[in-house]
Every structure is written in C-alpha cells, then in structure tokens.
Image 1 (cartoon, rainbow, N blue to C red):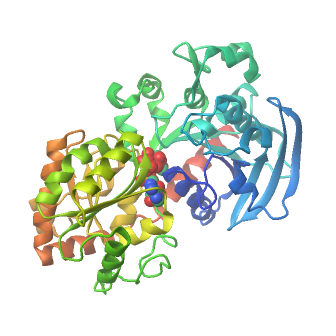
Image 2: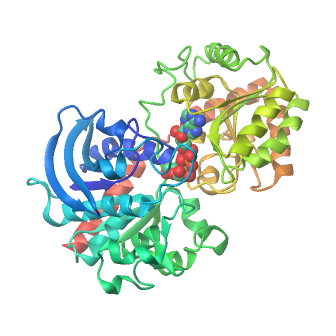
Image 3: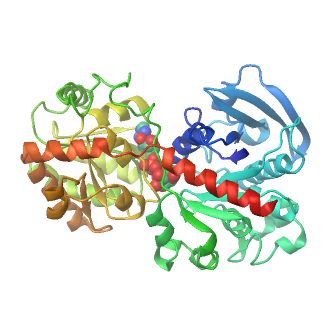
Length: 479
Ligand code: ADP
Ligand code: GLC
C-alpha cells in the first residue's frame, strides 16, 4: 500500500507542536504495517537546508502566482516530497506567521497550493509513483481532500484532525482564486459561515475523518467542543474514528536518551535523581526533595495556563517547586516570569522552545502539570509516563484516555498512573496539586505509580495497525 501524507510539520525538520511528532513517527510505524508513506511538506527554509541533492519531480510556472518545484529526498529516514516555492514558504518567521506572531496574510494561498499539489500527485502520480490513498493532516493539509473531490479523484482521502481550534478560515473573496468549480461554493463544499473554511472543506470531502483520541472523537460531536463543526461531524459520525496517538519509543527512551543527564529504567530508578539535580541546576532551583512539578507547553488558553498562573502560589505554599518551559501568549509568559521572581529558588520559567531541555525535564521532574481546557490527544503526558514523571491532567480528550487517576480503587489495584482534575476549574487544579503533593509523600505508593506509568504501552504499533486497516478498507471500497 502506498500512502501520500500531506502535512505542514514533520519532526525533526519543522515543529511547532505535537502534529510534527505524529507526522514524523507515522511513516516508520505504518511501514511496519506494510504501508509505504511519502510525506508532502512545504519547502520551509529548515527543510530545504536538509535536502542535500534532491530529485526534481514536477515544476509549476504559476502555482497560485508562485513558481514552484516538487523535490524528492530522503531525510532522517523520512521519504519526503517537498513543495519548493520560495515565494510562498521561504521567509523569516514561523511556518504560519511572522516573528511578531501575526499570521501571514497569504496563508490561504500557501496551503491551497499544498493541497493542490497533493491532488495533482494523487491524480497523475509523479515519475511513476502514485499513491493508493492520501492522508491529510489538519487544516493546512485539508484542501487536498477538497481538490481531490472536485477533480473526481478515484483515490480515497483521509483527513486527520489534530486540533479543531485551528480551522484555516478565510474571507469569501478568495474563492475565485482557489480554482475550484463554482459548485464548490456551497454548504456542501468550501463555504463556511459565509467565508471559506479549509478544514471544513476537507472534512466534508474526506472519505474518512480521524482524530487523535477516542475521547476527543466523542467530545467534538457536541456544540461545546465542536467549535462550529459539530453539526458537520455529527452528520458524518459514521466516518469519524478516534485513533490514539503513539509515541516514538526510540526518541523518547529513558534507557537510551543522549539528551538527559543519566539514563534510567523502571528497575533502576535511582539514576533519576541525577536528572533531577541537573534539572534544578538548569533552572536555578533549590536542591531538596520537595515535589518538583514541570510544565512543557505552548502557553495558551487551550492549555489552561491562565489557571496554572493562579495556582502557583498555592503550589509553593503546599511545599512544591515548579520548572516551566514554554512560549506563547505574551501576558502568560510575563505572568510566569513574575511568579518566578516572587518565588526565587522555588519557581523558574524558561520562555523559549528547547527540545533537549524538554527531555531532561521529563527525566528529572516528579510530576507534569497539563491543565488543558481541551486536548485532542496530548503527547507530553505520554512522554512523562515513559519517563516516570507523573501526569497531573485535566480530564479531557486524550488526557482522560491515557492517564489513570489515583483514586482509591485504582491505587488498590496498582494501576494508577497519574492524577485527574475537572477541566477549566482553577480550584480543582489547586486540589489536584495538593493531592499530588500528598501522594508524593508516600514513597512506596509514588514509586508504584511511576512504575505503572513506565510499563504502560503507548507505542505506535496498535494505532498504526488501525490506520492501516482503515486505509485498506477505503482502498477496497474505492476499487
Ligand atoms: P500541542 O501539539 O497541542 O502543543 P502535544 O502535547 O501534542 O501538544 O505536543 C507538544 C509537543 O511540543 C511535545 O513534543 C512537547 O514536548 C513539545 N513542546 C511544547 N512546548 C515546548 C517547548 N517550549 N520546548 C520544547 N518542546 C516543547
Ligand atoms: C494537536 C493537539 C494535541 C495533539 C497533537 C498531535 O496539536 O493539540 O493534543 O497531541 O495535535 O496529534
């Protein structure tokens, strides 16, 4: 089976969040299931820099006004098709906006181009290679499904939702430039609340929709979490599947991680202490045995970071310490820096993006705080579980699906792996922090919880099998 994946991020080349981790890990996991994946990505500078001597596959004189080439190369074992269109993708700043955080005004053009090229590859193939199925990720990949549908493509297309909060909404005026047939301007096409919705267009056009946990697949059917798309999703519920993300166990492996101070395993946990000390040093925190909470997160409303700001004083008064790594909304960044000033030695914040430091934090922290208001899957709690860092999570989406609360029954059965609290509730977060500090006081109980988490299997094997089975079904139906 040959699959063309379409995405805007891929670890280790370009990453702003978990999407990149998933898109980077799936090809290897699907490969083991007999699915050969090639991934179409935009030619961002960070990607072009890694291509070496790429092969030229296609050329466009005018792709939505830009000159473009399709290049093929294998980088870090990933089989890439790169849309090299400097006018669209080579600029200073991030993948979606400039250095000040404003979205690029031509994002519609950039990601319509990505979808158009995916549909071209699905239609005619490139240099003798043609996929059997297309797998588009999030709004940036979603137009692939729409173009394929209006091309009357014979191939099936799956769209995966990683986060419904990002939808790719644009004004109606761009419709003429999307080069779609006029009937695409309808509620059954790209039209979305009077404008254009890329994710919406993909979801209504896809042969199947997946999202990244069973819990989130349920939640998005309700108006509260559906973010305007719940009606569409309810109408297509028979085609919606929740397939839990896995983790790349080679990259996140405490026994074999060059980015941490000292390797450790569930059987030899003593070495965790060295990582803890290295983490305290990296953050300028006091050396002591107080429960050390960590945060590795985008600093946004989704992640409940405003609730955490409110909970910090209580965390410190209760005897805890906090090391936070993140970037995001400026007021939240400022609030965490102010808390660090207030509680020197007890609270520290690194505002920035630092992949190696995130590994050391998982290896040295006692507990990770993830008070998300919604969480499609979440990967940091899965990394934490593998590293013996106990997740303290809001009971939503993939967090609820992957962490087992330390209630009395779970503790008695020896299966507890973390602490749950009600979402969107600062008082509940405060109580969860207090409960975690109390649990940490019982050394044997805490060790048992760490070990249960480290034993949990969140590898990609099972989920990749589900994707492969879904792909095979759709290909059979299409043929
Ligand atoms: P989301 O994709 O919503 O941000 P996930 O938990 O799925 O949430 O994935 C976040 C990914 O980004 C994880 O790999 C996490 O370790 C990483 N990450 C987030 N913020 C930072 C940061 N400031 N520095 C390093 N890694 C980060
Ligand atoms: C999104 C979600 C996150 C998920 C990630 C990968 O960024 O916010 O919950 O883990 O995608 O699927």
